[in-house]
Length: 252
Image (cartoon, rainbow, N blue to C red):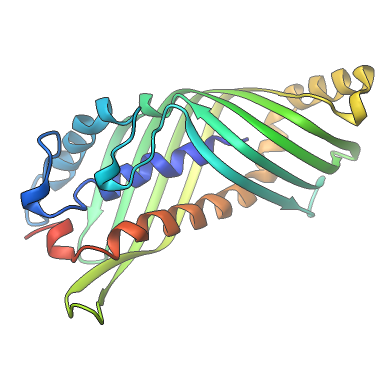
């Protein structure tokens, strides 16, 4: 249920890859020009050139280590439909994000919009969880270690931005105003330790139920996850954009 935490960092890589001044660009970075008729393919090549460096992170681009990707906290509150629960996940670690495949990039420079399609073969997640509520009318409560394996993940993302004039420099900058993500998981396996205060019988039954009905559970929680990832992505990426003018990020 936490694949989006890794997906938002993968998308940050795509939008932050030129966020340094030209004279400071390390050799593994390829600058793309917004007037290039092959801009979309240039972006794909640039992302591929970054791939070997993502495991340990790229401090100059403010990209953290991605193996594992660490996310401090995610909260989900769902009260509509067959699922009603509040859950908190902390100390989240996600493995497998650097294996993403960027299938396509479609840029709309005039409207400051980017559409991306990605594929993730596999993600593995560990986190500390706390959950209380009902899933398909069945009560669920517990806290402890949450583990998840997710495979064959297709992702579509649309990033909307806007240009503005910096009060400090007078130059034109860019910021993300909206982020939409839609994901489709081929298969998921989830296990929550210490459900129902350690009652093994109830815990085993609920974990079996969750894995038998993971598609239904994921579909209900999906909007809350999308909103969480959107806010995380906007905040993180705009830290980069605020420091550099648009002509440095994406020169003519």
